[in-house]
Length: 192
Image (cartoon, rainbow, N blue to C red; front, top):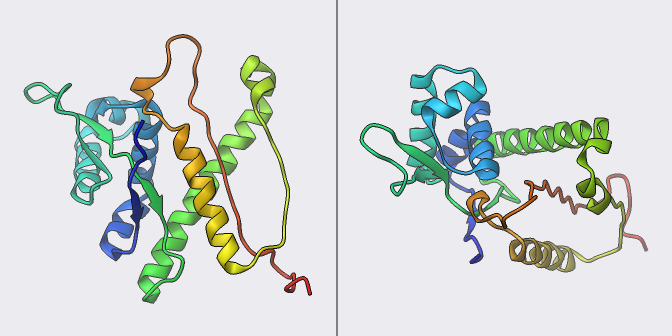
């Protein structure tokens, strides 16, 4: 699969569109499961179909999702996530952008925490996937430039393994959550 384009989320209006909790859930679902209609998603999230359709159009307005024209027919519109490497701003130009970016980061972290907790609560049921899963905690000492390079190399590696749900190999495959954090350790000095 070709590398998804990097998208630095610096437009405050796009950030606000993505920060809406239901919109972020819709996008995550489409990324994990593939194309769906607003009716499918309304049923999945126990939401009003009209509201779900509105939120999908807002995500489309800012380029996070698009209509899957190959599947859509008549009034039945399928939506799919636009493949992209979404990046929150490292530094914000204004307070509003900073607040919204922090909110998205908080929601991403909460999602990762919920997914990991649910996995650990029922780990035995995942069979071969539980045996193949890896959990590691490590650290190193880097300069700021090295940390930036480290992050880019990680994203490049992850991208080599990314595929849309529709492109999953036949047989037993699952969506895999990958969580990565690389940041200065709070309360630690420069190591010198």
